[in-house]
Image 1: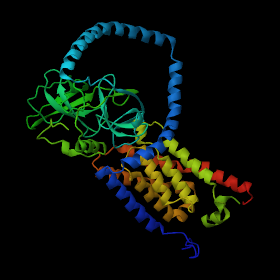
Image 2: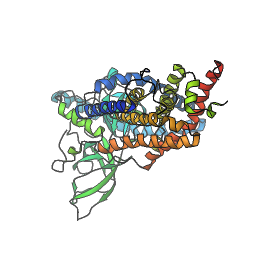
Image 3: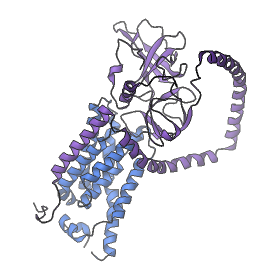
Image 4: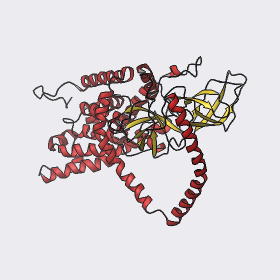
Length: 309
Length: 177
């Protein structure tokens, strides 16, 4: 070989030796990260390094968006303004009713010594969709500094977006409800039927497995969170049923639903606090992290589809 | 005499090492390109800018850039793409190993044939990532995923034009060619 240097030029181990070393190192890292979640700290510190670069990269498109906002046509603004005004009028009567209800509820709460689950939410802006073709996640510009904790439910104006799965210093990752095996305990709004909505791993679709063929579900039904997992507050819209396939040959009906929240295309989201009085559940946390990594099939246990996490 | 007329070995002997600044800023630029807010189908077909720049420097500066750099950059990409730590690292290390072994052979071809060789390396890197993710239980992300290594390989010519001419200009200024 003409490229082999004379032995007095020291060039370190051969490429093959290096390849073996680095392959083993990479595999060890993957096992440590996947099995034991041991590297969260390492990841967190690397995020600090990566984050400013990501912000710098996101800047041009954000600036472009602001510029587009600036040059919006006058008549569109006027139209939007009129629409918003009618909407406010429509909603103000409802809002007054809500105020009354809330006052009543507060009284009841003081008796029950509980707090509203919707208070103390953190408003975050979506930085970008995680650039990873294998999972469905978004990155939000709120992190440890703002008090974000792993496990927090995330909503937007129309429904549940997902759940915080890993927290960085200045940003955190939200696993969307459409992520494969990401599950949310739900309830059918019409008749209170309980179920678990499970992400299908495809954009814009959620499955509701393990519903008997005889279950009273029709296309157009709305699933809201049932709240029995004590992670999601009850009553948040999760998905709307798009199709129900009932085949007598199968044990379960095949129910497909569409996420209610603009899961793939929102800009602002709300991170809701975890219940204050809930006991710490280290095993549950580990469980929660698994689907984010693309596994955790154990939760698709047909025996207990409603099992709280 | 044009640098292309030389054999790879002669080219190596004649040229000054590329400046550390050029290497650093080209890698930084590639990283910034890859963390642009890509989404949807575009994200699937997103070329791996970091990998192609890494391969360029492996081929042209084999003494300063190698598998260690590939591993470190891979870890950064894993963090920024929120993947399992080590996936990109393994893929990059494998591709860089291929580049190191085939370096003399690849550099003796003109650019189109070089691109074809590079396609092999980028496809190998993608297959490593794909295999790891399928092993971990992910779904096949769709065939658009296989567009990404093709686009990455097609970037070989632009990257050469951008970075190599810079290196040559530097050499000419210093009177080495």
